[in-house]
Image 1 (cartoon, rainbow, N blue to C red):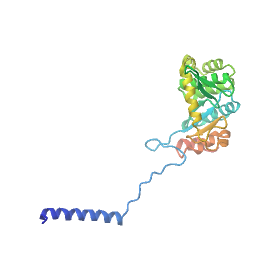
Image 2: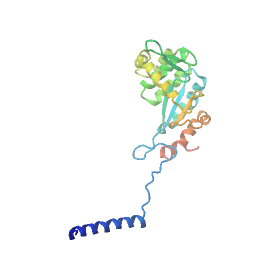
Image 3: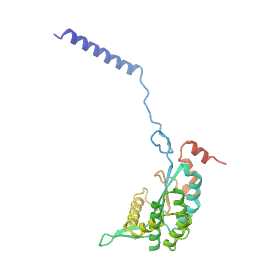
Image 4: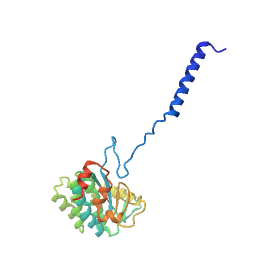
Length: 236
């Protein structure tokens, strides 16, 4: 025989369980669906992050030069509040190591381009201000025939105080390490790089033809509906 107190407890438990089941069956709760915006990434709290534009390019490539000077810098000057730029100078280069483990780079436009790519990579790391960083890179890529002179001239033109750090980066193994990382990132692109420059927006290659011709419009399409994006992307 089950004690009376225990029978009462079991009965109460069964009644409560049955009540919960009936409530679920008769009054189903709507599922909590996370409504992700299709065109931009979210930060914690739901605030839209800047659109990340990553530029895979070469310092002596005419198409890279055109894109940076005619599309990237002008777009950033208009859309800096909604746009973040990552520079990856490497292009169609190849990385090997010699018998002593030293990194060796073979660039599409020869050794001068390897030097220029390294100066670009070092400048991109050393210069904190994103607009000045782009201004310096834009200046260098206009005339990279003597990469060291281009770096010094352009850094001075935009009042970069730590020019010596850029040179130290270039002269040390760190510059080569940056180049290797850029190469790894370039080779990891899917689909693989066929044309330089290749641009990704929030990690997607999307419509390259449209991006190369009108970067600002493509950035605006990727922003979502933030107030900053509405102000910047408003058609005249």
